[in-house]
Each structure stands twice: as structure tokens, then as C-alpha cells.
Length: 214
Image 1: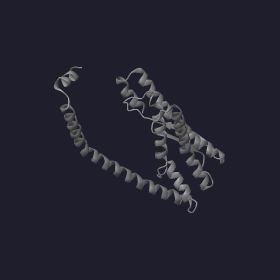
Image 2: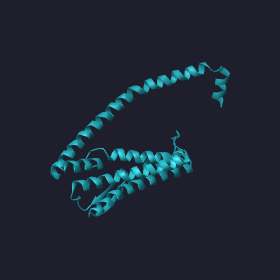
Image 3: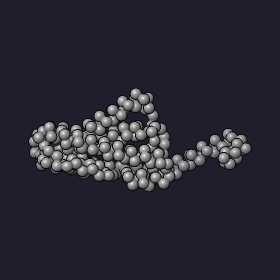
Image 4: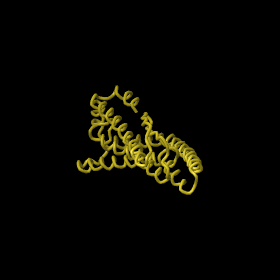
């Protein structure tokens, strides 16, 4: 994400660069709060956290051990996404108070869409983390649920298999979407050109020339 900001900076004004950098920092802070959710809930059950590692692809709270009971592990795994839900609700409340529910179309980030984008990003983090693919939060919650009836080793194995199946399925879906987009783009471009022709037909020639000269 920082690389994207640097790449785009040549075409942006200084104020827009500040907003984009601010969004990057805000997202990192949200990820940090997510990991603190794991760490604090684990401490409640007597499990300490070695450290919290943040990177450009996310974060991880390394625990000294797993909680003893499966339901405790479920709570610890769910605590991270719960933090992002709270953040999204708080931002949604601010947007409701200000009446700014719209997400303005803009190629850059500014004061109008900063909070809506941040709220959407937190919702996306919740959805992404709840995918039941181990070792993501959803996969850990799945393992905790399976460990109620199975051994933790067996539950981990099943959660990993399900995660691999989902990974293959998601890759296949992305591949299909790429094919659809590849064949759809020429058609969409043709439709846009037809619409432009229809619009131009309704305008006098002198107005078209005037627009081209502006």
C-alpha cells in the first residue's frame, strides 16, 4: 500500500498525498487494534502475547500458547474481527451524524471519502478474516468449534484441509472472473462508443466543435 501511494504521488496534489498517507496510517492502526483485540482477550484467559508483528499484508499476535478450552480459543479468534466491527460502527455513527453516507466517486482520497473508505476497509477486514481458512481467524474459530468434539490435532487437520479447498475455490473464481472481464471489456467499450455517438447526434455541430476547442 505505501508503494501505491508513492507511485501515485507524481500525479497528485500535496493535500491528496497527505490524505492517502493518512489512510495508510489509519489502516495500520486499525490492524494494530485488531491484534490488540486478540492479545487482550487471550490475557483474560491467562495466555500472554509474545509480540505483535505488523506488515504490509496484515498483522499477527503471537501467543505463548493456545487457550486451554476450545470456546476460549473461539473468543480469542473472534475478538480481532469484533474490534473492526466496532470501528466500522463508530465511523458509521459519525457519518450518520454528519449525514455523509455517500461515497463520492473520486480517483483520489480526500476529506469527503476518507471516513467512508476507512469504514468499508474495516468491513472488508472482517469479511476477509472470517473466511474459515486456517490459520486465519475464521479458520481458528472453525478449529475451536471442531475441537469441542474432536482432538485439537484432528480439528487442526480438518480446518487446514477446508482452508486449502477454499483457497483452490477462490483461485478458480478469480480465474473465471478474469475470463469474463477479458471478453466483456471490448463489448463494454463498444457500448460506450455507441452511446457517445447517440449523444453527439443530438448536439449541433458547432457545439461539438466548441467543446473540442475548450
